[in-house]
Length: 514
Ligand code: BES
Ligand code: MN
Ligand code: ZN
Image (cartoon, rainbow, N blue to C red; front, side, top):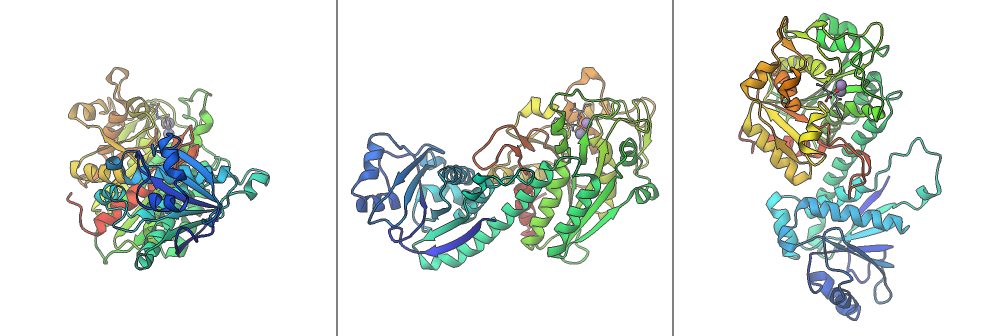
């Protein structure tokens, strides 16, 4: 575990392996960097002059230092154009710096946190988003340095990893607010990392029962309640859609219910629902073999739900919040549902299963019906639901669809700040018509000519969300990254945890308009 600490010290006398200083795109060093440069006989100014360093976003330059500085190295990191700095760019630059230092085998890394009235450009960008510099740095550092390596033999490289992040301020009065922000950043990063680890686990470990166990673990330290419904409970509740998907698997399904009672008694909760398919083979409508291994991530929505609830509880958000995760495998077998089979969902609506690979919407149908029991303030579901969302938005954004534009806009705004982008798609009456069944109430896929796969999936879900304000986030393109990004290593991203936690904080503060 990486240690985080705060020190009130001068930059020159601070002893560390690596002191990181941010710079916006400039012709000359400015602010604290310029001040330090005069002590370093103008060497940094020369680097700017020779264009060795220009402050471009995520640009890095590592310098060995000597007296009078007590830091062994100085790492300059660019933030890009001064008037375009955002919280997410700062988070990225931090991640870039942290990983760079780790590669250089430096084990303690110190970030200079400017005084509130310094580095005006950086602060204007952050002020707009109301994000704290400290929190952003802690998030960027911890998220970028996370490795999922429990299946690897202990390697030498583990020894040279960063052990400590130090936050330096020269302003004593700033220390206590920095403590608060740092602790918040640590709690968020911990929840994201736990979410990523869940998603990274292969499906022979991460079964529905394993997810349920993890949910219990997540609940414990914060006094959340966790209840897990078994197949027999699902039968009693007539969750025919979830049971239909689970039928083909030897692994028993689970329906996880996590509750954080942070608000006043009987205040309606926000319900978060996450798709928990621990492996999606497609079922009888079997998927082709290429990249099928990635379908272990089909429980990302569920993992994000658990991660968000644990973050919300750790931060003691004064709001009632419920997390629901319908969990199952989607397997082909002699017991599996077949194309054309009709399932009766918990809502009473019947569904023609025309393609067993459109299983996510089936298990979510019953979970959304269950959510209505809470008479929620809002329902937000997350699911790696369609490959079509990758066609529409690539890996840069998740799609947001729903029945309430204000809710969608609030979520989108949160995502801008946290660097988890959402982009809206409509659900029009034609799309709802496209999933009306021929011999049952609904069918789980629209006819081939209709197109708009992400939207028709959303239209299907809409008929189970009732009249509650509801949004669906299709995270199929954003849950898994095939490349390293500044603070997101290749693999599971944990996309959604910070976004939803921010959203829940805002609902608790009553700044939501929906
Ligand atoms: N889990 C998949 C969607 C998915 C695709 C997630 C790529 C992550 C990356 C989902 O269950 C699925 O199979 N959807 C089908 C729906 C189709 C049969 C209508 C799809 O997108 O092909
Ligand atoms: Mn599928
Ligand atoms: Zn799936």
